[in-house]
Length: 87
Image (cartoon, rainbow, N blue to C red; front, side, top):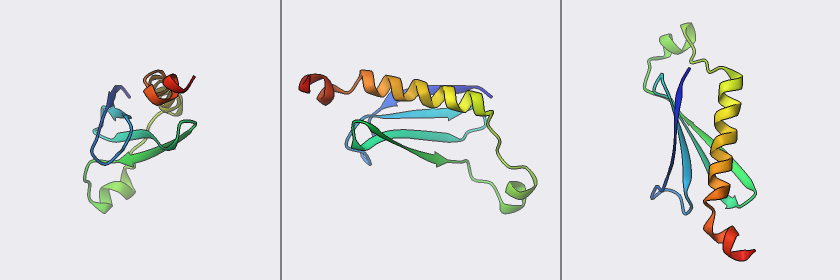
């Protein structure tokens, strides 16, 4: 499964976030809202009815997912202005 990585700002978050948009329409948001070294992820899925979720769950290859999360984390750390100015 392919994905697109975007670093962006969102009014819901105080800091930059990374959005991983997968080819099935699901989105994973990686944020650092608690502090610079703590990452949180949120999962957002396209609307599907409950029968479809039971019979055909959304699956993401673990290696693809872990690689995407690692890239998002790396990009957020590189763009963290507050951390760079504190050094």
